[in-house]
Length: 156
Image (spheres, helix red, strand yellow):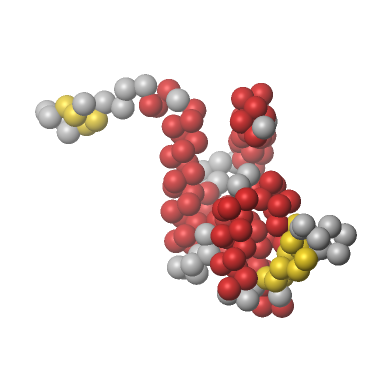
């Protein structure tokens, strides 16, 4: 409810909720990511797929989705967009014909290198108000939150 005298909003219990702060941090990070990438039209999901494909040539589309916590349909849409831009190719796995292997094209490798440079600058900007020790602690705490029993159940 709005307080008309001071034009402030009563945030009720929201400031006490870790989930609220995680969500707000994610929104702010996404907004800054898009700004830092100068309208490159590559989303964090697309960037993540490119990075995984670069580090794991021939990785299956399913493995990418699982690693990034994306469902099958979302993974397919992201990979389709990157393939349409000729950044990666899909090939049927010779070991398991049900799987699609992902391979970056030369163009994809070149773009990924540029995006990684931007991502590192974005990360530095994101953690500019933190010491290196605080950054490490934050990363560790976020991993603990993500690996909580509640998250493991949600993944099943």
